[in-house]
Image (tube, rainbow, N blue to C red; front, side, top):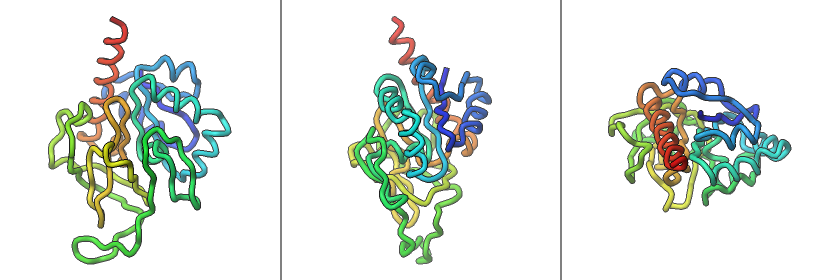
Length: 215
C-alpha cells in the first residue's frame, strides 16, 4: 500500500486517483501508524511553504515525515518536493524539513526565455527534463516526455542530489534526491502517461524494497 500524506494543503485526491488508475492500492492518511505500515509514502502539495510548515509543525507531522522518510521509499511532489529541502524564500523565508540539503528560490521576473521575453510566473504548463543520472524512477521514460508544472519557486538542492534539470529561463532541478528518497517539482498525476510511469516506477521500487525486507 502507498500512503499519501494528508496535511490539508495538497492534491491528495488526484494523486490517489492516479495510483488507483494504475491498480495501485493507496490511502490518504495523517495517522503515523498507517504511514509506518505503508510500503512507500507520497508527500503531495500545492500552496505556500509557510502555511504548510505551520500545519505540519502544529500537528506533529513534520517529525513523522522526517522519521518515515528515513525508513521507507518516499516521493515528494511539487510543494511536497520543495518542503523536503532546508529552507524556502517563500513567505519571507521559511525553514523546511531538511531531508535533503538545499533551498527553494523564487523565479526572478527579470529572467527571459529563449525569445528574450520575460518569463511568466508562475511557471505553468508542459516542459521536458534533461536527465543527469540513471534511476529506477526513470524506467521506461524517453527524452521526449513532457511533464506538467505549476510553481513560482524552484528547488536548488545540493548538486550531488540533482537528478534532472528543466529549462525555464534558467535551468533548475526538476527531480532530485537519491534512490528511495525522491522529489519531483512537476505533477506526475497530471502529466499523462509519462507521469503515470513515474508513479508506477515508484510503486515498483516500493514493492521491491518491501519484498527484500520480508525475506
